[in-house]
Image (cartoon, rainbow, N blue to C red; front, side, top):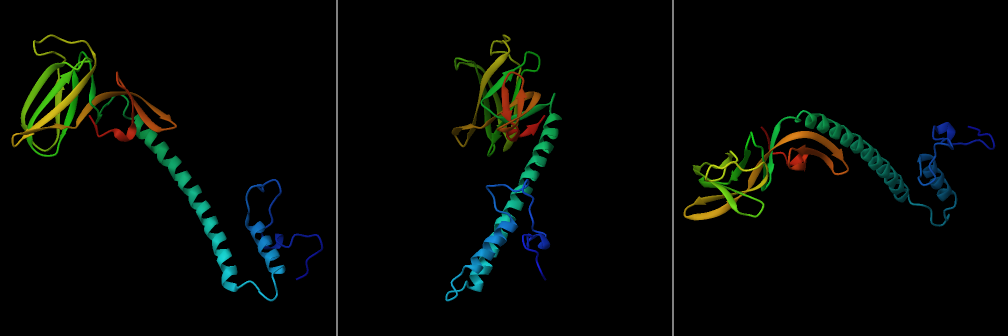
Length: 220
């Protein structure tokens, strides 16, 4: 096959690149083949390039190209998953969710609800504390089974006086075999809106602010 002087021999192989599409800071297939050809032309005749070394370089280039392809695929998949999550989260607006927290929001009408995660059965006690740390209500639920057990505070203190709406601390203890230990608490919150930012998807809860979407344990 004869190649005209000044023509690009790589164009016949389908490897020609348009100057406008070529990035100055990256190497394409045509650049790689040019480098390989130059290397072969200028190799020491007494120490020719070994075939396994030549094949190794080709394999390295193929690996880099494959990794770039995987990165592009994962990026597209990530965007797709984020869009899917956003659609799912938007359906939570107006619904309640349970999430790990030691603070709950007292709504004058609905009260303050939440849950306690118990590793095993025991006597469950839930306390509600105000901003100063004083216990305003103590609720003894008796012996409860392992798992998530729910509670609801009507917003009244021990004397029956209604307390103002706002944020209150919640803490739980479980007593079993004469030993008492703290138990993880969950707070219930009403989803008002959904936000998508640099840190991912978050839910904006009434009176409590934003929480990461992946912290939601249950929809109520």
